[in-house]
Image (cartoon, rainbow over all chains, first blue to last red; front, top):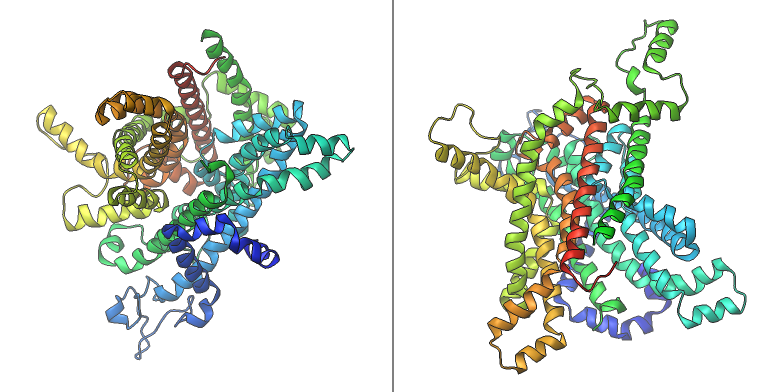
Length: 298
Length: 319
């Protein structure tokens, strides 16, 4: 999304006030750099990973190196309870955790824009119905709703994406509706309407471009929440299932006091990865909001 | 005012209706339904049909829904498919522990979050403000379970300041005060872990609200009158900037109840979150359904209270 934007209007973007503001924001730049590093880690995981993330490492005598510390196993971050290399698993988990986040946000943003536009543009009973639905969904804590539905459905990575996506659209829908109610009263929309433009044309051509920047910001911040939600689900055992590694389910394996105390190398690295990924996305989203979201300007 | 409250209460009725429909539909998604545990390959078709009839499963879905609703109104939330106990009693037994945990986290996040936010706003762009900003970002970004595990590792395992998990020693003997202190030691870490994200949110919200208030004309007037900075901040700015913070009251409640699931598992806290996690493990849909309903209604109540509070505090809002 971002890339297309950059190539299409590169000269404009780099010269906008928004970009200048963004560049001055040290936290946002830090977030962007860390995030790019982590995406790189995920994309090039097969090249970087020293071991197969699904195979146990064996010693020369043929023994599986279970629960070995970095020093004992000669690996960077030690091995897990099945003797698999923690570092390689963290790299492969980055792919899973980030793609779950990306797809979930794609779903929730699409649903949010769709329902929000319908409610804001047509008003009347459509609006009432959709907004009551928002109120209802809003009463269920997102994490709780996601947990319940994932329990009921067969646990799989696709269901995790779908459920997180379908439970997170209320914020976007509310916001898009509000913006559309505001924008549709503006003169240029009235003008277009009086020239006989169709509803769909007015929404797509005139209204959505005006709300795109804040939607992107919201999507970025939602991505952070989606990654956190996936981690929590997998930690509870109803998210991404073993043997596929996700950062969250790597902590699921460490959910007892002996692992927690004696083998910190098994749970600290994936935990820190979640923290760094979510933190850098939050920094980035906040920076984007300050830089590009016109409503925030004073 | 009274009209506003009664209108909000009336609006809540369709929402409660929606909550029950959604809960019912989610549980209907469950593969196998309530019969799954009772059927084995040797069960005959006739006895399956008899069981379906006895449970009313042969009727259209909306009749089943109405039957279920009828039972709910009589206070019958069904029976656990795992232990056979009544769901409402199971939840009732666990609710106080969760309310203690979420209530403490709630108080903690506002009592600590608001002063930190005010400090941040009044010391804008100083190292202290930057430090607090980074802290608040970390607070909303760290997975609660990871933070909880880190707390256990550092403060329970290495430093041995607090017990690792649980809800107090049942065999503990001593004066009431000692008992209270003992309970408190068990509460500190889970409450902190649950509160952190909310605390960070409250802090950031207070900061931006306070900064906005400080740029208002009446603040400039107050300053030009020669009032001390202390007076300006605590008398004129603070009260007004706290009004929007009330909206966070409503937002906090679903976050805290959702978070309780994770935190209660990390710290073996015997509340509804742990009941829920166990129910997930046992695929105990009756308990999950009861928990879903009760949580949603608690959240609805919380939102209602925060909206009403808002309208009482802010005289600019007219209904």
